[in-house]
Image (cartoon, rainbow, N blue to C red; front, side, top):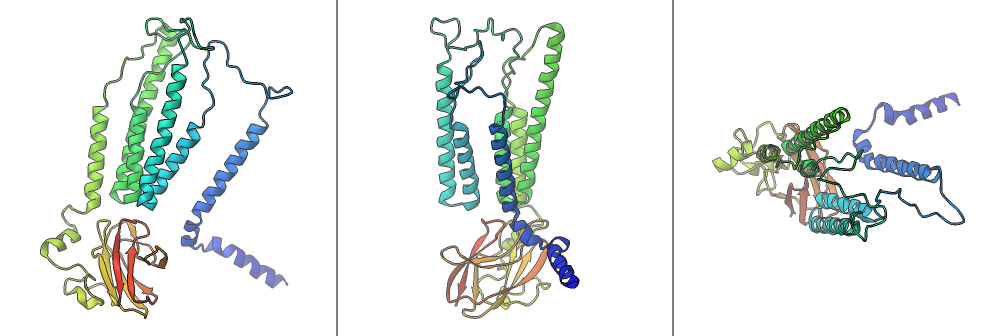
Length: 370
């Protein structure tokens, strides 16, 4: 009895002591969804138990304090969040979904803009004959009312949106492009932090002098724009593999055929194939976030071996095979270069298939089983 309990405890703790990292990584979306669900449940609980509540026989309509204008309720924020979700989905799914995501996000942002303009147009200055209820008094001489601090205009939100776009693009491309996105985001966040600190110091000074210098209209952030352009250009150049010491570029310039191209066996790769590659029925390499061949020919109706040479240092790749409908028939282990692995691929019926990298969907090619 005790031995059975002990063996059961060992089996239960085995996934945690010697974890299957591949399976755990695949469960990350489930863990994140569970965390989001718990957070939403906590928000709902806090909202339901918030106090004090102003209720009578029916719910009392909220009234803003005198001199304060509160915008009305709107569905624009959740709609914009849905638009951002569709854009992210389109970036990873590709094809028509990317266009659908861009369209939905554009529509939701235009809706939000219309809501904001309509709200702004209904807030007339308090000095007019038809002032809106709760409108703030009109500032005199461009100065905010006493005791009210208005932050100066800033390009930082726009720069942050641009850097987030660069980061998302880097997540899709990977490698140096991802590093460029991280650097761009860090640059804009540090700039925003610097501006916020400068504004805080100005407010502290105003507490002593009674005068708050907002600094006037901001100048165009030419330096930051230039830095972002250089970061993006550098990331794209480094990710493209066009720099010297690129084996893919050298092979193309010498006219040597890429490994595994145009043949069904490793012998068809010719003498240019790397001698360190293990014996396999077909070979394929990856370098510069791209396969070194776009076509493979394999025997139909019987299993075969595929030698995969990932020459991208520090970048994960693999080879997966899909049928015409997109169903995944085989998924090779993801390896981080430089590394070579031999896949044991099950038999494929005669026909045409697609091979693709599970990490970088832009890396694709065609497999012909005959």
